[in-house]
Image (tube, rainbow, N blue to C red):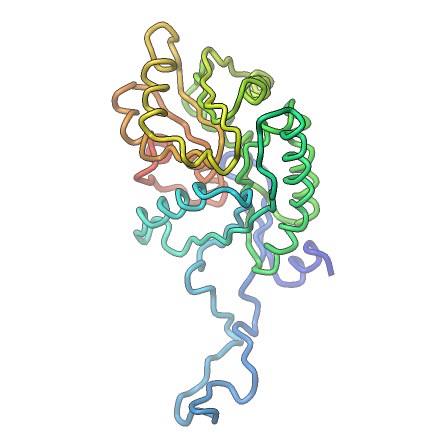
Length: 318
């Protein structure tokens, strides 16, 4: 039974994405018996517990932590930043109308040789990530997520928006679930502000920045100024200090000469939430980091419409 057939048999329901307008199938992951218990049920010292009662699995108990939505997050195995940032958003917004009951199931895509110094190494990294993605999906589906999040700047390794979309379309069909992707998320976010002139901050080298600039141009945005930290190892991206990001934004991007509508940051292993919170009031324009924006898109698509704190203007305002 494939995922689509399983969804149909278990009473999946359909919603319409609040940003994309696309049909999103949300599988029912609480189909009875849930939890399924082996006979004789609850045991005490190896024997059936007396007078304990039963856990009525026929009602279909939800996941205790992810009872509102269980997101599947895919990140390169070297990434130590994105999951941390997404959980921080969840933990800072635990009100009843917030993200209590929203959970992440994170799966690593194996990238054992994360060197990025040369074009050959970049091609190898691309092959590692895309080659390992289907296996990662197979592993993630065992936890029965309801919606998936791509935690990778695909424009770093793939040139052209149609070429970026192709593997995501393939993975969406393979998984039978909808995905939040950076290219869809940032287009929606910039659209909320009517932004066209952007400054771009990345951990990429010259070639990576050129590929990212191409993606934004094809999406209809002008990269007026760009800064890349030329990280030669994907693991090391997480070690770029915040002061360097702040300096790049204040001195090289969001200055009077560039007349930017927004600052955009690529590279999911380069944490930006703290910098965003600190500098947005200073520069007066939105700072749109990939992790917060992609999670914003996933949440809004799934009907979580309330304002969220701790991750920048976008999540508070839209």
